[in-house]
Image (cartoon, rainbow, N blue to C red; front, side, top):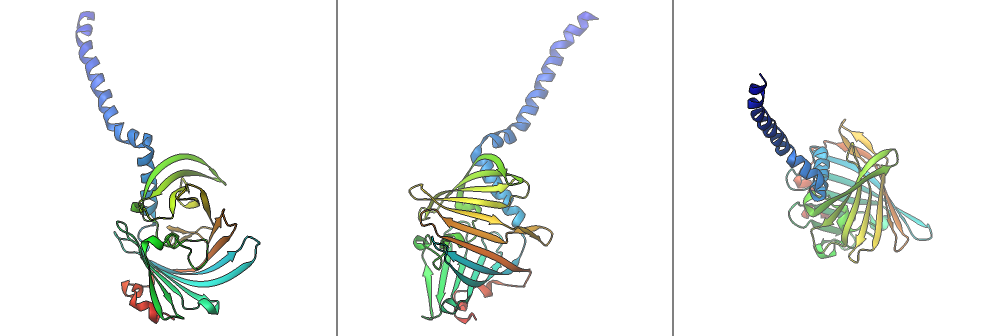
Length: 274
């Protein structure tokens, strides 16, 4: 009996080894991804985009409040329309309604995943459509603390990623990832992004300029869920740490599935906006 047991034992041992090796190799990809901060950072960004896909189109209103270092304020009212273009990038149209000196000014953005965004600014006083070149998209949007490149959709392919850590953010737990713009003409060297672990909503972004100085911080608040799926913020505040100025965007009147199409987002159509 014992003799037979010892004769079988090498076979049992080898079988156990094979099973363990099979389990190890089965888990290797996920273990590797978990240990690789670049892969993990990219996965967070991809998962966040996937959760936001499928909305089709929406419109909203914005109040833009600009504050100088002394706290003095000026206000502007805008309309926004967004069209989702699957596999390519969203199209965004911002139109100013108030005050009178900027009424009718419009910014059209065609976001892209694999190439630079296309942007056009319509100036009604000049009856002119001005193209914003990719080298100028780091400039201030209408005197605000948001740059032109901040106004487009931050497509996943526009950055490389690196997961840094997890930490509390209010009552939630957030992942903190670093993303670096692929475009060498970006006004930023890198950005740090805080997203809650459960819903992958962005709560804060730190922006660093080309000299790696902490330039701005975007704080996001007042999220609401629409269509039982999509989370959109009601308030975004961009603070410039160099100038002491800030800009707050308040979002209201979200409406989805407006039957918008690409004809509503053309350069030639900017002149007809009312």
